[in-house]
Picture 1 (cartoon, rainbow, N blue to C red):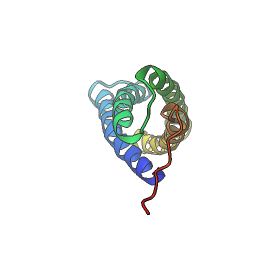
Picture 2 (picture 1 turned 30 degrees about the horizontal axis):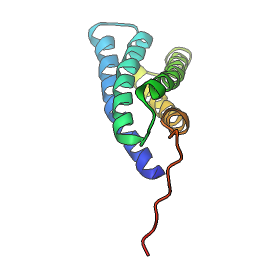
Picture 3 (picture 1 turned 120 degrees about the vertical axis):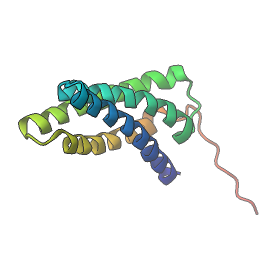
Length: 135
């Protein structure tokens, strides 16, 4: 189950990441926005899509939107903060170009998000009964 969940999480995350990067690159290259606001705007857009797809396709949860939504927002705020800090460090202090910096940041935040969502956001409120094996 863990392998299937992680695979689904990565696939869903890939779709959300395409939206994140599209918004970020569009704002940076077309609107000439500063890199940090551009990436954080992309993060929010990708996060909204990520919630909808993960809730439906990745995690079997009995949590209501009211229960899971605020938890998702707390985890997303942590990921948002990590994204800001890592991008500021990588593109500012270390002068790494913004796309490779964002790629590293995405991988780091992906692991943080999966662990937090699996163990807290979408964790079942009732124990799941073990499946019986057929004789």
